[in-house]
Length: 324
Image (tube, rainbow, N blue to C red; front, side, top):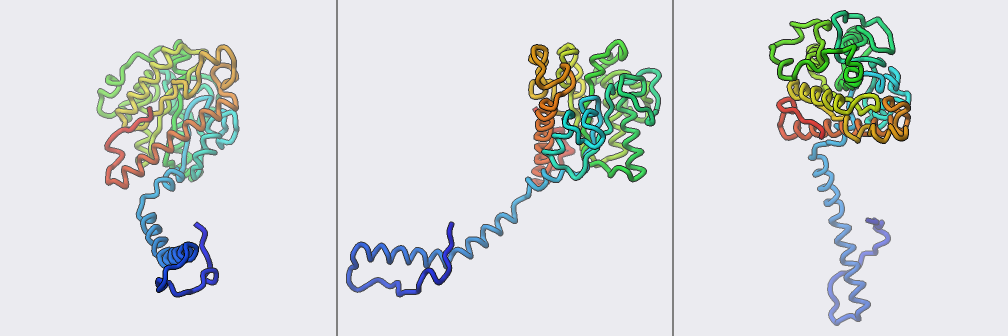
């Protein structure tokens, strides 16, 4: 609304005239009366609105401040580089939209959740292909080492996107689907009881690694992403892996974002024409942008839910809230 300086509205006697005024005169009197009243109540109205706004929870501010984010996973995360700044990897677009305080990737191309009987603690190894030690476990170890040395701030959000290679290379990971979620959580403490060489099933590996993260970073939120569709992997295997990861998230009280639907990649379309991938599995820049923005929106919604729960006196750790 336009405001008028005092000089623009001359003071005048606003009492009614003794004799009826012409229509034009009555209109002028009414207009000046309204302006005079508006000048008197406007400061109070503005102050009232400011007070009401200050009393409301700042959900938008909370969502914009995602804190320190780290990403673990396989090639579609690795493509963005350790600094999450290469546009062919979706984390670059995720970071651009979410605008966290900081972001770093510990992902490796070829990584799997599951290990082999030969898997060992080997954080120094660098490889871009499937291998015994190219597992999420060693990414967790590298993250812990980076935090302990002061190179990496303590993460507030940990995003893990893996599972494609577990489902793809089943000959190299023959026990990937050999255990149900219920069976994997039948023992009371997987972290104390297992080594990475014993986490041979997908369910056991997800539990093992997430409990390691919880032990090291108890206040961090963990967000698990299910595998994207791939033209190289049967959809039934991708969905089977996704179901296990989602089931583990429920048991762990972690968040899960399903990426195996067409919000991620549509493998049937990619088989006909490569648009969002370069080869049916790995994202193109357009695909990375699409997925990065989608994941950022889902994580922002998680942050908003947490803010609302906190403002309402509800502890978000009491329940597991998932993104459909």
